[in-house]
Every structure is written in structure tokens, then in C-alpha cells.
Amino acid sequence: MSANFQTTTFTKLIDEGRVKQIEDWITANIFDSFTINEIALHFKISQDYLSRLFKQVTGTTIKNYINRTRIDFARYFLLTTDWPVSEIAEKCAFTDYKYFFRVFKHYVHLSPLKYRNTFTSTFLNNPKVDFGFDVGKVVSILEKGLDTSIIY
Image (cartoon, rainbow, N blue to C red; front, side, top):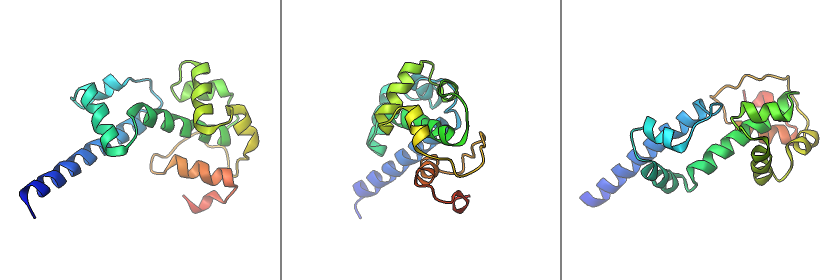
């Protein structure tokens, strides 16, 4: 192996580790309002570098990742609670309900209310979220009407 290949592989692993830390931080703080600049400051890197690094490692923008994660939680709450849609938007750190509606419709291709009415919850309402599981996976299972006990 050439030294250049080893250096490139090592750098790639470091970048992937750093992005994983950023993803974990975003998930842990997803219900708070924050900016990409605040994430960059937390990790002591520039906003431009953060955006480039995140896109390079994940193939998606950091804004897209944040919105997708928030929408996954919104979908989860829509299926497991009877909270009003405006309250879910607020809990998922969308300060503007109209923006939440647009983003939700962009990702899910249904309005939040239509989504709630289309899919039926298959387990008890529980607003507590365990960050040890993949919300997207749970939502997919809920949408299919499968037994959720297999994922816990």
C-alpha cells in the first residue's frame, strides 16, 4: 500500500467519524431551534467547511439532513399521538407552521393531516422517543401496519 492511499483512507475515516458526531449532535438537539452556524461553532469549524464535509461524506446537505430528521419525528408523532399538527410542528422546532407544512409535503408527498388519517398507529401513544432506534425505520413499520414489538 502506498502512503498516499493510507493517508487518504485515514482522512476519510476521520471525516466520517466527525460527521457521525455531528449527526448524533443534531439528533440529540433536534427539538431545539438551531442554525448550521451554531453547529459549526459547537464543533469549532467554519460553516462552509461543515457544509462541504457533510455533503462529501453523506451525499446530502446538512439542511436536508436536519429537515429529514425533523420530519421523521413529526411523522412519528402524527402516528403515535393525538397532538394537533401545529403542536407537532412546534415540538419539532419548526417555528413557522406554513414552512413545516411545505417541508412535510415535500418529503412525504402528503399534508400532515392527510398523512395522519392515511396511516393507523399500531401501538400505544408514547411521546417519549428513545434515540437508540431509527425513527425512519419505526415510521416505515407503522405505515405498513406491522407489529412494532419486533423493533424494540
